[in-house]
Image (cartoon, rainbow, N blue to C red):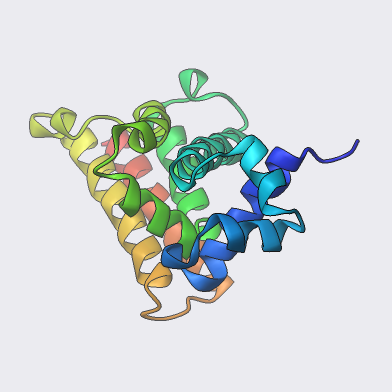
Length: 182
């Protein structure tokens, strides 16, 4: 099956952000990266804003697919611990600097934030649940630890070996499993 130009453009935009940063994302740079003319790109995305909105939606869909693959089921069919374990593994093993840059960039823009919020609402519980529930508090601590490790790597503070990432992911998951067992 031939890859659509739309998908090719989104993959090129993501690769460009990963390699050169969000400020280098222009219609011209993405067209070059995708091997298209600017006019060919503008057929799908008439402005940078439209490209960014689509990129956020596409990335959120990619995250959702990775989370489902990791959990082996949809969020609605997974326990809170299974959802957290999938989230920790995906954020520690698959999340990139570009994902982080784009998530942070989306914050003041509702049209870019909602795809991420939709995925996170399915795969993590509201922080308010931790106010009076010790197990929910442990899950929140574990989620914040996973997010912190992702930022540690994405911001270039240090490269974690695959073995250490695996051990950290397992420790985070075990923390929650132990809390649930009491």
